[in-house]
Each structure stands twice: as structure tokens, then as C-alpha cells.
Length: 153
Image 1 (cartoon, one colour):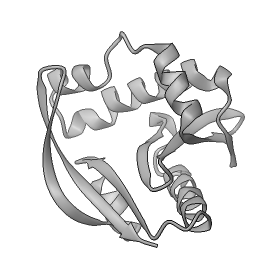
Image 2 (image 1 turned 135 degrees about the vertical axis):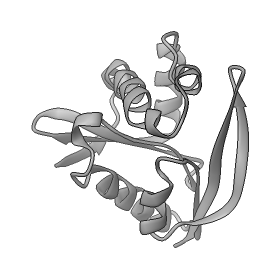
Image 3 (image 1 turned 135 degrees about the horizontal axis):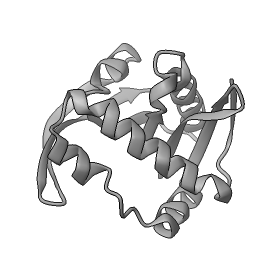
């Protein structure tokens, strides 16, 4: 596995990975209406690329393919961590999260946080994160249950 910095030409592939993962992997914990609102067809690629360039975004590659990505916002908040549906259970998320934790520690961050889906909660729990609070989020007319989680570094 190779982990590298985000490049602008990654934007479309990461949007596709995000959309595919949410629509297939997260469908086990959220309704089809929720999944459609979370990962819509009309994602603004320019806005997406600008956000990923502004934040610290890492891309994981396996077998020459993009297998996952993670985005660290403000040095202390994991904004996104997604693994392609075909690469689930192969250590991609663990490698990306480990790298995010290392980057946060090196910059002096003492606590890392993330808003975590029902689907991702077991993974984050295994990695030492604890639930700070359950949340209900409204997105494109759909209510979602998720969790604010954090880990002391």
C-alpha cells in the first residue's frame, strides 16, 4: 500500500469512491433516501477539490488503484475517511487513520475528533476513539444518526 498526498487530478476519483462507498457499504445502516442525500449525483467537483486541497488529504493506493482517502481538517478533526467498497477489510482505513494521527501529533494536537457514521463507529472504537455524544444531523432533508467521537493522542 502506498499513501500519498492528494493531487488535484484525484478529485473525480475520490468523489466516485465516496459515492460508491456510501451507496453500497453504508446502505446497511442507513435508508436508501438517507444514502441518496448523503452521496448525491450532483456533488460540486470544484468545491470538493478546493476543500481537499485546503485540508490535509491523503490518498491510499493498492494494486495501482485508489483504495481510500482521509481528510484532516484544522489539524485536529478527521473530516472524511472512506475506503473503496472493493478494498474493505484490507487495512486501508487503519493505515490512513494511523497517518492522520501521526500528522496531528507532530503538529502538537492532543485530541483528534471526528463525526462518525453508524457504519464506521466500530472501526473508530477499535482504534481507541470514544463516543463524546450521539448526534442527529439534517442533510438535504434527511435526518442521520451519527456520533461525535474523539481520541486523546
